[in-house]
Length: 129
Image (cartoon, rainbow, N blue to C red; front, side, top):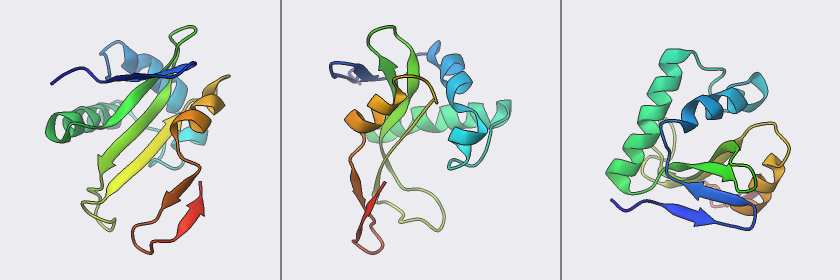
């Protein structure tokens, strides 16, 4: 599969590299960031999450990709697409999501890569993120 990479003036959305993971977890595996994602992860949960993200790309051609700040190469978080596969969720529907570290510049990621509104598949209504 061809490498995925999309660049803006400030950010790079790209495939994961093995060396990204320690920086990603350092910045995002905190109570403030992970409260929406199942809580702070131990080593086993981190490894399982990494394998899930990589499997989405292998199986579907898209995933939650790595977000890197262009100016210094800092790993800010993730952003992308996946098919919902969670019990109780809208199975098979597309999910657009992202998460970012609480670091300077991470707000730019939310503004540039995540849409300001999202469609809720179960109701078709719109909501602010």
